Image 1: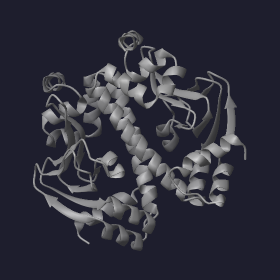
Image 2: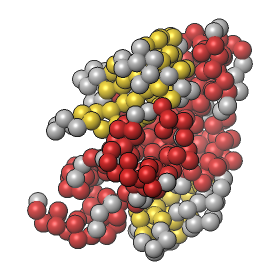
Image 3: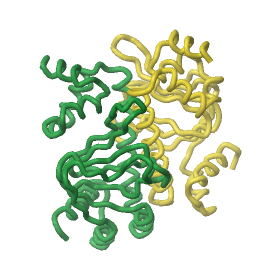
Image 4: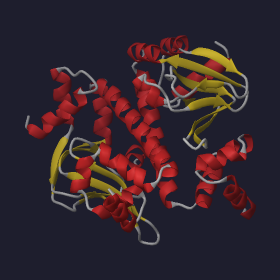
Length: 192
Length: 192
């Protein structure tokens, strides 16, 4: 077991207790990959074949609308997950890109392998139940905040929750993630 | 077993196979309640003690901001779930109201009882994993649509997905759920 694999077990164990046999089964189910900055792991019309755990680096998912404008969907640093779950779980074509923002290492698991893992290690079902539950709560909070808070409040929330991301991710991506123009973001940042 | 209880099993079985013993354990864990229209099941500062499955009627959750404006968070008809999951899973005070929009019947389960049920019927962990996964995907779609689509497109999506809700829920609630004014909603509806 090398370092990135241990990290996965460490983060899963924050939520569920794993035996050594469980940990071994989980590690056997994930495949490590390394990608250079700006590598695409998914493009529109492709089926999203994997769920990825980022062990180092950072990733984003985005889509490009009919006018050619890029919209950021997710921004993720190491020790978090990225995928297009809609495409992954339906095994239908995606509308999104997934791309590395830095040189990155990831652990990936395919749809069939994940189903096998749920059968082998039922605690993974519990882990993902908790993970999706938290992700759902966060998405609803982000939705409410988008509808009801000002862009400045949303930026300040992001500073509070994830200061690291602001240092490592281009400002244009942050603006798109917040649903505002880069000029508005720049004005908000100057006010601080 | 009466009719509303059967419904719960029917909807769970759409996603996981249950034995008769599983179904019996699940039904034993839920408690039926009946409420009149405009009954509050949760108010801000209270801990959300239950997850509710709506067997008949309809519910909404909302919050009231510092200016006194009401914002709708969730609109739910029969055969779906409602709760404040953030408060429920953290067992910390809620920021939301949950209220019936019609006379309604519900099945409720408490935090401790749900944890027991996961142990008794591990397939419930799988069911809620799938439920939260779908809810997360929907919340992200709603978020993207709020940031990037027009109010008219969002209304049309709602018409396509959930025509029934538009007949049964006051227009002011639909407008708030979409994050627009009742006047904008009225203009959009006239265009059709």
